[in-house]
Length: 250
Ligand code: PGA
Image (spheres, rainbow, N blue to C red):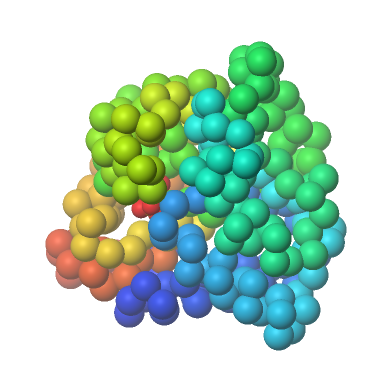
């Protein structure tokens, strides 16, 4: 695992966007995995800016998002489909038919999960997967204890994750209790992974990740098993990581 240090959130967002743009320009028909949450918002802002200024095209790009709440459809402004349309897809030339996000209102969620993994396979796998990290180390909605072999599936959200995400909802009670998430095994099959870690709230998560211990109780630690994982973290997130440990990753 390689670590790139960013000065602050803007710097991290710019670095991540530049990384994606270069890859997309080099491989304009690649398959990318995308994430929601506060962390990637800045990167998406830079992708949209670049699209407007430099016309980097997404016409032949296929995307797969990590997760979706069960019970929310795309018109609900807390659904991850709404988030992605709002922050990225409505502002670039991507074909909506090439966009994949698990359907949170499917009548058969189990079949939805199996189909999602199958579709990723049919597209030759994910070339570059973007990840955030939860305060508890979750990736996607793979909460602590998720098997590293797990596939796309229905999961129950932990109280911590529901509390963390309550800021987006009118009322904490409205945060769904279940979601569909790409599995750990599915994520780890991506050819390349780019994780973003920003801000004081992620200090403990960054410290745990960079400690190097690999454990299913801290899902993000699976990145140590991946041959091609890059973490971009800002100074605020790295405050509690001992300097000698940091050096080992730079
Ligand atoms: P955040 O969420 O970017 O809103 O902090 C990240 C995550 O929970 O994966």
